[in-house]
Image (cartoon, rainbow, N blue to C red):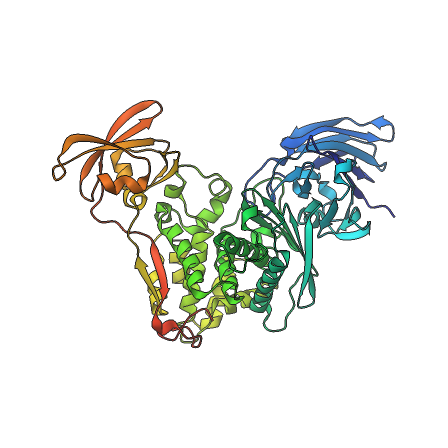
Length: 600
């Protein structure tokens, strides 16, 4: 029996970057509405995918059915009820990210949210799709992969697939091309890894081994020694590009992008900083298999694809995932303790260098993701804080606090308890509070109020010291001393951010300023009172200006030359550095002060 919904998907033109889609609705309504999502779950920004749709027409047999747009993402078609309605359109696909759609002579990729119209009254029923091979002879070696259930496919994967609902369809991106692929198993669950754009030096077997270790560590955290991951199979889709980084989670797969230079290379056993970052990305997206794709905000129990879906819990679902992504690398043996502390310090410093942490609680930053996180601007560091980075520090503080309780526990225990308590489904912040109290016998309401809904500093350093980790300040850089961020290119210093409360702001500097040089005098060297110095890099500033001394900053702003009074503060704090104290060398202990390394 034919399905009520069927999508026929063809790479219409590789060089013009256009997908052709034919949607057949077996039994339409008299005024049939269809709509394209405005966002994709996991990426909290209205992206207006419908702007790439063109040439939409509708027919029933030979009869043309009038089709009209009724809003920015919805069309209405006049049809005869009960007679198959065929809707055809094209989608321009030149977004080389994990969120939308792409098509060129080397590769095809799409998320259903960017390509496939929704039929509102049928979203909970089966959705069948047929994927066609490109007609272009240059694509003769192309194959296709997706996490969807195959119905009838050829040796290269082209053919028919079935999704149980539009949600499943939206959660199952499609990759096409001449990609590398490999497989491994995690506790009996098959995992597949495909890489597009890999260079000849790529060491695929190493990537498989390291990824398997990460997956095993995640399964151990959630299910103990023998439990199986919740998905029947899993697919990693990695696109290697000249430069890029990012990922998007799905229930049974993830789409990833990395810089080609960060892939592991044949004959090399060490791990570059870029490869470690790639492994952290893989760890992060795989952890989402549990944390956000199954255990998820109650507000996400059912997605509304036509508008923003708000939650104040991204600090938990993205932040806690960010805490565990690097921790799983440590547990998997892919980084050592020193490397882990360096990554932890990076998160700590990211938050510490954001004045917005004093302005916006991380719960509100979660709510405002739709208008702030994905739309960064010059003022962003002063107005908000990353729910990824601060959420990870909240997780750290809770983990270290739990380990010091009279009834010691760990954040691992809390995550497993939440998984059971919420039956691997929707949850609220009250569930988090209840799990913490059940584990320890006391309320964590004060901590959650202060750390999640307040703006005071997190007690990260104190908790680390209590667990044998020393936290010391490094000498500040000129940018940290002045309270600014800048880009440096071809000997030109351009300010990108001016942070609240800093010397740069007090001097009147602004984002977009080109800092050309400084004027200063120095009686000790005999320089004149208005000696001018060209500034080609911020690190050169201490050559001309000492702490506590005044100078004039020579600025170019919108074509005007300005001389701004500037003084380097006599005291400034640099970034944090974390090191394991000698007493933290052992693996044992419950994690209390002096009882050894806490992340056993």
